[in-house]
Length: 293
Image (tube, rainbow, N blue to C red; front, side, top):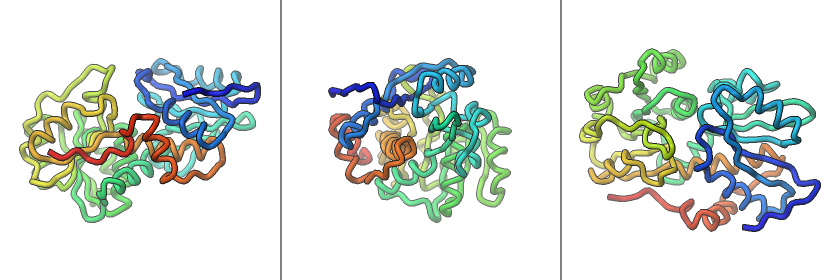
């Protein structure tokens, strides 16, 4: 991909730790080029706890905005001048627009995830969903699922952290721990299982202790992992080997990218028109449906 730089070109980027695996620059630059926008999108590693310094540097360097991935989403909240409704509700920011000396924080996780599920013909209403993890991404997923009629069980190593989500909607959210036995009990009766942890992500330490809890899933239950690098985590491979349909986090990444670019530029995008653009940039992977066993 060739990117034309002018003196007027506005800078965007994604920050995180780790972040060099990110597909966001490829996706965003493909859309920017297709739309003829005068922007460039970069990748910027930022250490944990350094968001304030980065924000000052980004403003000084003339960035128009940036996306944030783990572990920065929650730290950014207190640093924003304004928050949108989802960022305030979720307590996490993944899109920052810098305008007129002010920082505007958005969260596209929840809406992007719902759109990705819809692409896979998965709709939350009336479903019993198990969500693994209780961090910023999990919170966005859980609250959006609840708002669309799902009942959710949140499983987390620190169950007290999961109970913080339970307090939002006690009648719709249950909590459980993260031992193999606890995960299996939660999985037995669910209609959809979603991994919102970093377990299995490229460039990070940590893996599920075992996958026996997947044996408790009913036939036909889909397993979704928010991770997209690697394309198939071991969780998804194990689920597929047991006969379940699987989907990774690429759909969420695509929809987040579309929503974020709309925030950055103020230009309305046709997500359907952007999908083939993104698919070509990613070698067709953006259009890949759930893997079948």
